[in-house]
Image 1 (cartoon, rainbow, N blue to C red):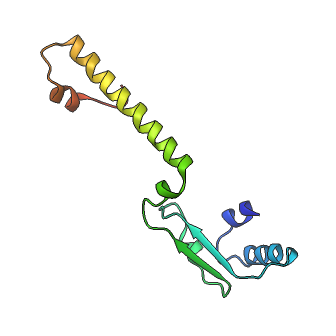
Image 2: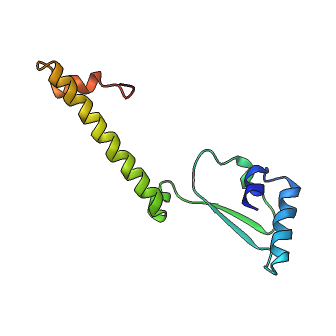
Image 3: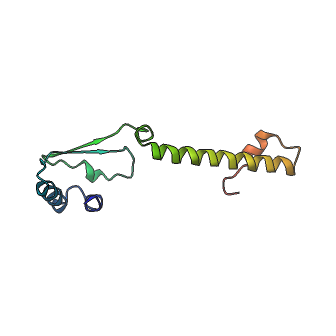
Length: 112
């Protein structure tokens, strides 16, 4: 069901028909509130107007507050990235003791 909605454009009537069919088969009212995080990859087609569908976008950076798993993944990535960065700077300073941290930072490249 979600794959059908994600791959269809919002104005596609087959998508609307699938949603209506899904809800009626389960004896659910056809009033839909679609809550999405606010990222640029969501197509503008999701902002379509259908009489029974309301699309609401969350405020920026709200995802981190409401999705603990995502928050843990991002925190782990930041921690690993910081550890890698400082490790590279320490290696540069070990190879050339005349360098300062600021000089190493300016020469640092994530591709190293």
